[in-house]
Structures are given as structure tokens and as C-alpha cells.
Length: 155
Image (cartoon, rainbow, N blue to C red; front, side):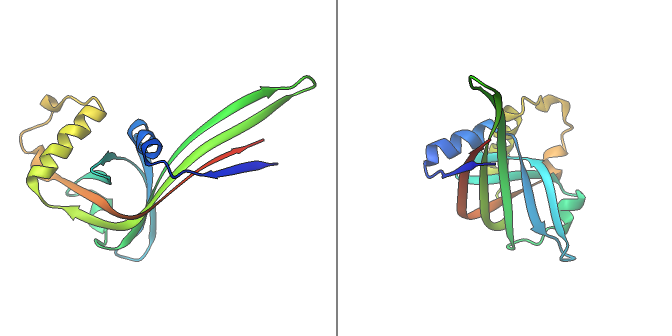
């Protein structure tokens, strides 16, 4: 099997992918030093990845803040290429990985703005939530140190 790997440096292309994709894989070591990998919805805003939790969420409670984490977004495609003699299956995927430290956002004004963006992104009707819901919401973000984006195509 032959594959081609292309490093992507175009930040506009990376940001476009982040705005199209809605979930990613968060990898971190929890308070018990166990590796945790969880697929979560996210919001990309202000050059950061934001993740929303309820305050009693098991993963949120286990997070070690200011510790290194990875967050990866994937998009894949399967394509068919017809040649004169046979049909060849091709695959293509894009991987964007953020490396950085996980931090707790504690500015209520920023949380409110992010929450509105989050609701819009996922087409969620906020009128269905009770009045105290926003008070139980916790927002974490990746203080990004490095972004690695690659596109792999193969047969």
C-alpha cells in the first residue's frame, strides 16, 4: 500500500476544517495518572479549542489542569478510482492535532459568549434549559503550543 503524506501549514485551511468538524478526541492523563481518551464536541474560537462540561461530569472532575493534553480532529474520505483494467479504492484523511496545556476558563463573560457560539454551532435551542444550567457549566480550553496538520492519501 502506497500513501502520500502532506504537511498542512495553511492556517485558513486548518481553521476551515475546525469549523466544519464538530467532534474531536481529547487525550489526557487524569488525576490517577490513567490515560483517558474521549470523543467530545468542541468549539474552535479565538485560536483555541473549547470543551464544555457540567460541573459534576466524571471526566471534568478527573482533569489535572495546566497539564499537557492532545486534542485531535479527523476527517476521512473513501474514494474509488476507475482505471481501464480495475477499480482501485483510495482513502484520504486529514488529521489536526493540538498539543498544549488544559486550562479552566473562569471569566463568566467569556463563558457566556462561548456558550452562545456553542449553541449556534450545534443548533441547540437554549430555551429548553433551566435557568440554573449555565451556572453548572464548566468550560476548559487548550492553551495551544503546537498544531500539527497532515493529509494522508493512499491506495
